[in-house]
Image (cartoon, rainbow, N blue to C red; front, side, top):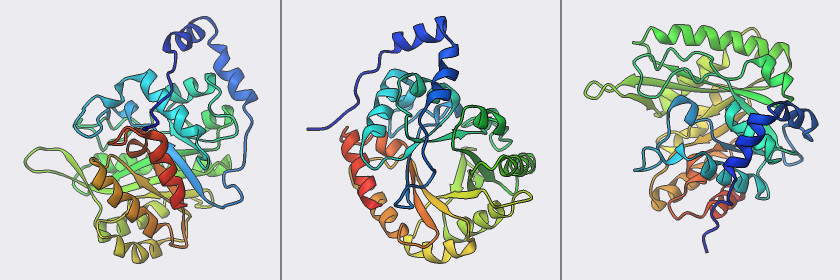
Length: 301
């Protein structure tokens, strides 16, 4: 039987927010913490920072992630599974999870730049509209994540590069790890939509650029896609000595999900790859079995 999400009472969360907004900070102050890497030296993180960029679609449903109570139920179930280390999300979602007690003993990554709204003309001018480094420290969270999309033909890239470098500097000053997610991108001439290039050469260049951001790389991690041809990953990952996690997005039908799991399994054997950060493919699997999808991903580690 498919193990779907447990129900979350959105009304109860709203009542706490309306009457006792200080409860979020109180929950953050009391949250039991852990080290970033446990005894295994691996990380299994569930990602849910898509909605803040207006990216709500999964598969053929353009608003699949719009139901907040449903999303929170899926996240709470995923975080309860053995081997799941933590979650990546924006403040609205992490605040809810704090109030639900779902973050106790988990690694918490705050998403920092969500200003490049999906489909917008300014998508690559990706402003830091989410967590600031001082917010992450104040909330006693464990790391931050920034998205770095690079289009050589889009002037907005330059401002994003500079902002990302300064964020890396500040995170290093506070001794907080920052996960940099780089992509080389281009606009589709016909539709105008932004496309990420996951070919071996493009991923190699994006890793080289991301690794050199800021005045110190001591606290920088990489969050990278598996290349179109997974056999290229060994050469691609030789570009940097920074620790890296693999990202995973919306993989569509079940057979595509099986292919994605195999690509991850292969890449996880590489010496600088420390784990997985996966979102929609685990939270919204084609067969509805959230727990099963999460357990399969954990098994890869």
